[in-house]
Length: 170
Image (cartoon, rainbow, N blue to C red; front, top):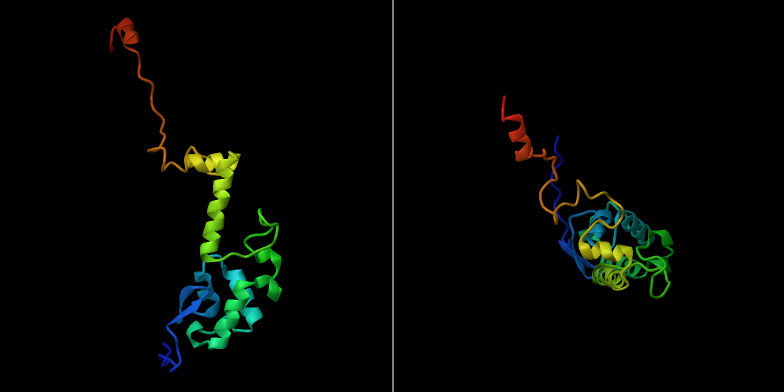
């Protein structure tokens, strides 16, 4: 039997802004946080636990104080004792720190990393330049979007001289 539709509370927000990203208020907090680039399911659950917010609670029903707490935890997860292995930037190339980057900063840093690899002409950088797979995958059957159609087996044509010697078809 279907559950009856519950009326939405008066203070329900359909769009909640966390870490400069608009998130849908109808989703559960744990899943809604994954809409932020750089936040996966594990980190979203850890952030909810640290902020003392139920993962199954709807994001639109959170108070302003709870939303502010989520913002604080996401902006500096190390300060709230979230494990370092959950960060997406461990031992940063420039500073050597363990960081967790979000949204635009993450895109900018990834672009800079690729530019650096291309500039120093490392193996990974060269593979990126040529549009090839970087991590050792095979290329004969996959990654053919830049190369054209499928490589098939073609029969060798019999040379014309061989046909004349045998006298053509028998």
